[in-house]
Image (cartoon, rainbow, N blue to C red; front, side, top):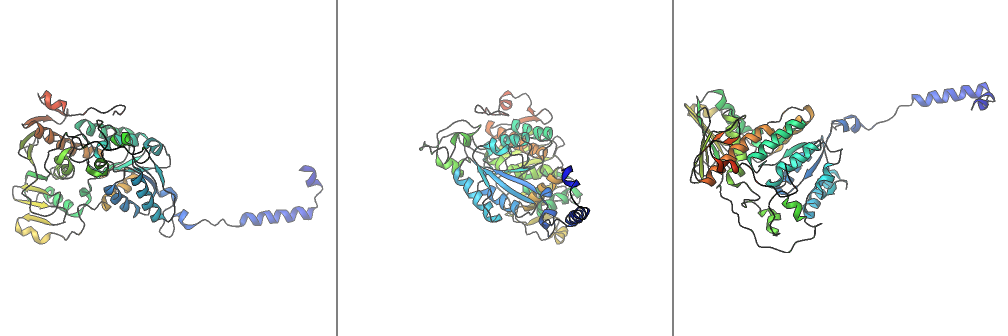
Length: 425
């Protein structure tokens, strides 16, 4: 190189220097989408997501996630090929490409270090364990409800999210829906007087221990039955289970109190400012369970006697009035003098859009979302306690601090369930 420079004329050297300077001055053109222009989000500000166990409700959640421009959904994992492919088609059609990856192995899916957050919408039996695996893999989590099958799972879920510093949003979207927010704020404002009773709309509690008859087992690629069962006790394959018919079977489901109580007991806990505790007594009355908090507020879990304002209704009774609301966005209340102030609410209680936005914002800010794991754990524990009392057919007393029943060995054994090997929490 040195010899070549010696033999080069002064004019040639100057010409090359000018050319080099000119090239350096030419600007690089970067697409506006990379910089976040034109209402697009720069890659550094996007939340890269994947989905785990996405069935009908999960696809409804996914539709709302995809409506957010700062979400990039790239992968789905499911034990069933049909569901994997349905989600891939949905995502690819949204983005106009074929990039969504499919997985059957949950651990291969969670090992991707380019995924920031996961949508978990498996059956109930997997919610806690899948969320824990995701948290340990460094993912934030939006998980459908019920979030746990037992008191023990509820506690393990909350403790894990805190330990790993993950943002967790339970799919109890009514905490972010206008009419429910209005009802809770009205109670907490004191305009109805002192709160004394809260009512949660639940379903009939019963489940069955029966098995459906055995059917031919499909190929593992079509449906990985062992993975579908996961931590649940083994039973022979029946297509009804994997098509959504697992509800109502004890091994897969927490019963009607938990099914809706994960929403409505949650609303009652919120209204009564009990998000950090649970009732101390539970007594069954037919399909109802009546509970009492340590401060004397009563919680009534019932499946009948509602005003017809929509599914998952809640009612809050105070010394000077009451308010009831449900999924239709309607509100009934006393005293009559307050009715003229009720706004018009148009969002259905099943709409997760504002709840999903709350989650996405918290992923970015690292704040706690409205239905954090701590909040969800307490409302689920209350629901589990009620179901235990209903199964035993008698009153039980509970210590929320120790999370154990007082002087009741039989009830304490029901705080957890045995998990099928090799799964454990």
